[in-house]
Image (cartoon, rainbow, N blue to C red):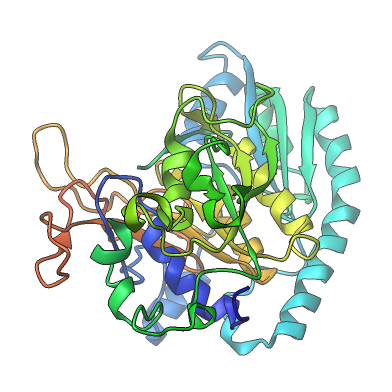
Length: 410
């Protein structure tokens, strides 16, 4: 038995080191400068007040217009629709206590339930069909003619439409992260009940599945009991194992059992129970709608499963402002529901020629309310004094824009 501790404050620190999926340890990026966030100056505040929010994502607007004017074939387009909400996303969560935040979240869910029925009718009116609604997140996945997107956004129930983009994976931890010598796990203490190991809560791993038969995913000192307590597939392949191999690697970095090989592969939260939500298929590919469905399940089941942390070592290129990006909206609503959301920065820190790239952090890593983590180069040593940001790790400032009344992009 392990002792209880303040899971949400302490465990978030532990899980930071288990995000990026390279064979290196990791470093947390602070909240990078964001192109589309304003500071406290009056000038920038006034400018943001003039923003004209387009209802169509940048990478969808031109194809939709061309199809509308018969300049390209009018095919069916898979989209993510943001419902119009009377309760805007709260950006000052620190101003709310837990009860106030929960009440705000529940009001938003009820508003979403009232909107979705009308939205289903709106989509059908333009020749489309709703595939799935996500009441907890205020989002809908649908399929409709490309040329009819301009017609759909006339509805007051539609706040924003973006394509159902493709999602890809971003890919001796305890020693190199400094976890062993911080007092988090005091090996000089003869009482193991004082170690903070992630017990008393569940981590949701949204990835390519987990090989639950792997010894690192079992408590070997407890008769081989499985750490993976629940599995669900969102890809349609009907399996929850890890044919691609990415999700098992990620889960092992924080959940790897300490008994094996003298703790050579021990994770920083090896006492945690794991929930496996599979959104990447056997080739490591997925869609935004898969990921949104997994986040919706997580929020809906957070109380029953005592879910404290969600880890997403995956993402897609940032094209929208975080204010409109559907993955960012889904992640923020999970945060509003009281869950710590951890995601990766990405692996696009340099191009094929080795030239450093800035502004390459993906979505949902651009969302201000999540913890975004990038990779570090440890130079093969356990000491942290020589650690630097890995050259391949994505870095800020974060991208995304909104359109001002003048037509300029900010």
